[in-house]
Length: 226
Image (tube, rainbow, N blue to C red; front, top):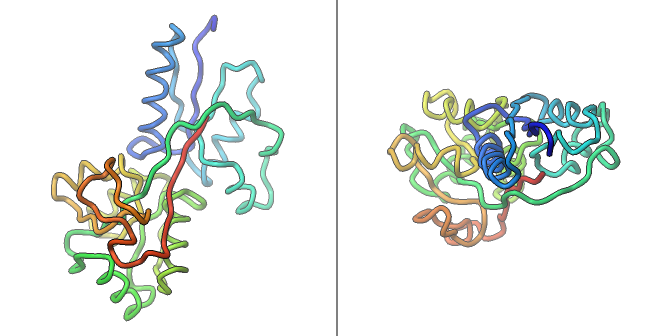
């Protein structure tokens, strides 16, 4: 490359999308010997960022770190770009489980208690999601279907603002990508009750998988790719 590279992500600072994008930018900069600039363009389920990259010159100097375009293609009937033809896949960046966390003041210690409470109080648990169509949003919807419960989902522009709502008590539960919440969990500021894959994961030690926690039919993960 003869000039800096722009790496766009559809989420604000503080969440996994931003965290993974900055990791990728640092490594790309070392390997390529140029500055890789991270540009946060949050909003509309990352479709704003996708549109920015779709409209950029197709010269390799503008990249997008994103979840799979098929998700927004299914959720948004009218997109300003063509997800099938406006992008070329480069590489997966990360894949892994999400963490189900609750506010410290919520008297729930495990997944079984969470499901029982949600069934007895439909719609009374407020779920913080990081945007319509985001991995945390879809993981929560999948959970509702498998567990037979109903949550009230509140959408934020990214994982960082969603986590702050858990800390403040404005919402009670969150299906979070690990980099967004592991620091808060270790610091005792929120409780982790399960991860969203059936088996436990060495990347989030000490937190049971959904199978061990009592919901073996539930299995969900997140991914990002360039």
